[in-house]
Length: 256
Image 1: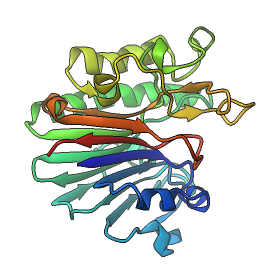
Image 2: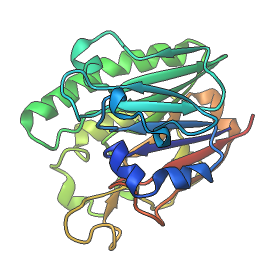
Image 3: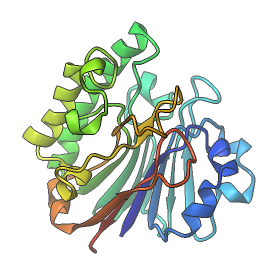
C-alpha cells in the first residue's frame, strides 16, 4: 500500500505546476492533501478528480480560500469522517478520515502559530485537545496512519537552523515535547524516522531568500502510524526534484 501526503499550499496552484502529472506516475493507493485553499464547487475540472480515485474534500467553512483537506483513494472507503466535535477546529477544514476495514487514513492539518500570538494560542489549544483523541484512536484496536502537515519539527535533525528557531512557532520546546511524547511515550510511529533514523531531509522551505535552493528547510510533514504498522513499513521518500508547493510530497510504502 502506497500512501502520499502533500501540503499543496493551494490545490489549484499545485495543479498548474504539474503536481497531478507527477501523481499519475506514483501509483498511490491513498493520497492525503492539506491546504487545498478552495471550496469543492471550485474544483469542477477533472484534473482535481484523478481517474481511478474516489475523491473527498473537507473545505474550510470559517474562511473561504483557506486551509482545507482532501483524500484520494483507489478503493472506495467504508466510511469517510470529517468532524471531530470541536467547531473552532472542524470549521477550518483540518481533518478528513477514510476508513478501509480496520485501517484509517487521516488527512490532518495542524494549525500554524507563525502569524501571531492569537494563532499560537489556538495551536496550543488544538494540541491539548487532540492528544486524548489520538490516545483513543491508539487504544481502539484500529490501525491509523495520520498524514499531514503538523507544523512542528521533532529534533535538530529536522530543521536546518536549529538554534536560531528555538523561539519560533514550529520549533518551540513545548511543541516539540508534545509531538515527541506522542511518539516516544505513547508509541506512535514516525514512519520517516523508523525507516531513516539519522537522515537529514526536509519537507518545507520558506519562500523567502533562497531557502529551497540552499536546502534551508524543516521536516514538518509526517505519516505517523499506530504501533502495529511499524513492522509493515517498507520504504519512504520525500520528492523535491520538482516544486509544486513550498512543501514536498512525502510517500510511504506499507507491506500488505
